[in-house]
Length: 70
Image 1 (spheres, one colour):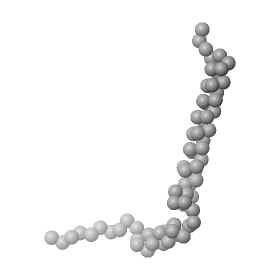
Image 2 (tube, helix red, strand yellow):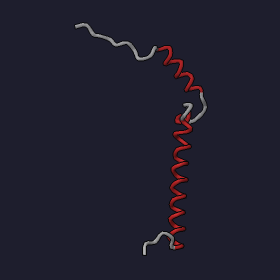
Image 3 (tube, rainbow, N blue to C red):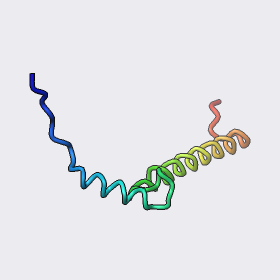
Image 4 (cartoon, rainbow, N blue to C red):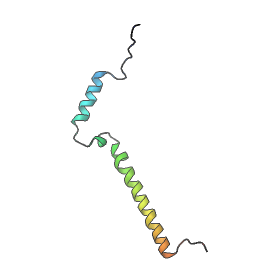
């Protein structure tokens, strides 16, 4: 039986070009894309700050007796 070969998803030249581009950037691997700062930095910072705000508000409410059911 003859072996059927599939066409590559992208041309090899384009892959080599992209590879050289990403290897030449002197940033961390997870910050190389255009939107990687949003997913790697902004979203975790937003989640952490929201959690800290809610914890702080809960502690304030508990210490002042706000929101208690009688």
